Image (spheres, rainbow, N blue to C red):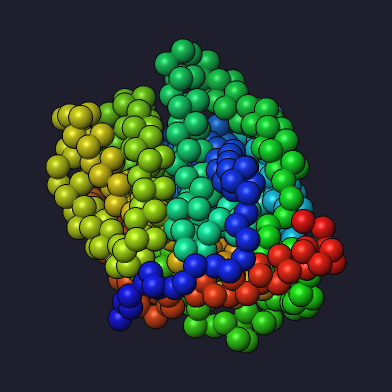
Length: 456
């Protein structure tokens, strides 16, 4: 059952964080995650339209697409390793140093993909190295999300956690927007032969510039007030992973399940549609990329809006309504999109991503508030990454297999509906926000600073 939100909680007794620190943390969370998701989204788009040709040549396009989407899934399967390693480090040594490491890891892996020779040059070594680099990308993303969410939310007012934590949630659509924009621009400027020969690599190589900017932003930050309060109080966990699994199992399950529906929804409207739109419906590649581009642009505004709304109304109720809407819209989308109108394609993707936004906006706040501050990085990272394996990792692959074997989109829509049911279960068994936990730690920190026992 969805309980009421804690709107009547009294104001915090802790001193407010300076406005410039709040803005800096919000921007660092937003830009860093956007840059990392640019790297990840470039790969996602390329796995649908480029890699089947460059790294998995086959006389059967279906087989090549399956192999390419399998490497896409590797990036999700490797995420729990990142969540395990970097999650525990984030609770033990701090949010900031971990976020610098994860940014470097994804950036280097993406740059190397951009210079990797294709199958015709080095043979079977090409897809093998590609998988290794994709694995490294996934490990980095697995450790990134939890820290980015905490970076913005732990600087902000816990009563506005939905809005502040949405900074990291804007990362995927912003990264997707930049990635698909780069690919669409290159497609328009270059011939088919030039694009497949070297043009697609430019989008990957751009990550070097983007990561350098992200590092500059993050290195200027201090760690969050909550983590510094944990340090001052001497309350950092010694074995956070074990503690999460032994004392936080129900919150972990709730956080995992709530992510599956949004992950599958996002995979449908940003990854699978690239193949479905071009191969099945007959649209030009640029038409589908532009449709995804427009949908991602709308998400830049809708996600923070949804996060802010979840601070004012019941967070889980808003999340649940959007989830049900996404399940229904999948049937509508396939029903109205028949390849005759690119406008209908754009409308279908925009509304699909709109429903995703109103799940994804409140999602970060909902997940981190399942765990106490001392276990937040570990708990939220594990939930995020484990859910990714069962949600976004296999979704494009399953969509392709279902459509190839049935010749119908109905099975795909049903698959999404099942994922949404799991999300609703996760929302039902989770807990509401407890801002008193944050207040206690921050008050301790402010007291230590006031008495000169620790640096502000």
